[in-house]
Every structure is written in structure tokens, then in C-alpha cells.
Amino acid sequence: MIAASAVVAALNNLYPVSTRRLWIVAFAFGLVHGMGFASVLVDLGLRRDTLVTALLGFNPGVELGQLAIVGMFLSLVFAVRHSWGYRRVAMGLGSLLIAVVGATWLLDRSLALDLELF
Image (cartoon, rainbow, N blue to C red; front, side, top):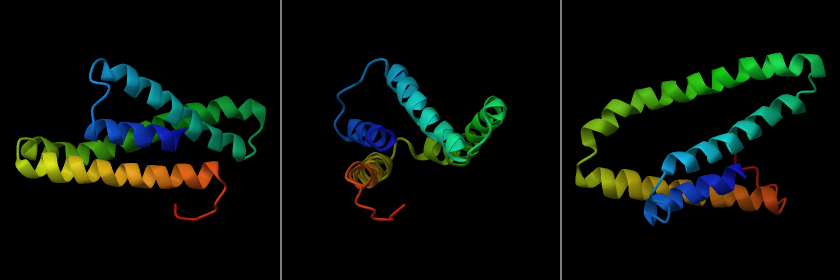
């Protein structure tokens, strides 16, 4: 589901289908991604009584990591947001690359191809 949501979001950048209330889509995809990341904790074999504590520590760590990455690029993106290169190169090529990687990951996982790409 994580790979599928990445493909859908990237393709929506290229060919907007959903243009209203994008926060709802982002929230739903965030829940899917959060559940996927949280499932890693189950795979670690933690005891049931420590699972909630681990999740409460893991989730803020993931969010802080995402904020750090966004923070590094936000000022740059804000500065170039009106340039021709941003729309065509960053958004277009970046979204296409994300869609291809996500589709590859989706096929790898759903068809058990074991491509070992990521």
C-alpha cells in the first residue's frame, strides 16, 4: 500500500485528478505509511507489553526525521518555486522518478519478484 500511495501521489502531480481537499488524501496516505512503518516494530519480535512504548518512541522519531529533511529543502524550493525549471524539472521529472520507483517496488512486492532493488 505504501508503494501504491507513492505512485498515486506522484501521478497526481503529473496529471491532477484530486485537486480539492488534498489534506484528506495526505492524511489517509500518512496513516497507511505510519501503519507500514509501525509494522516493522512487530517484525522485531518485541514483547506485547513493550510494543506501545516502542511505537510511541518510534513515531515521533520518524516525524522528526521527515521534518529535518523537509526543513533542509524547503527554503531552496521556496526560492525557486516560480522558475520554469522547478515546474518542469523538479516537479515533472521528480514525480516521474517517484512513480517509476514506486511502481517497481509495488510490482516487486506484490508479485514476489525479489528484485532486491531497495
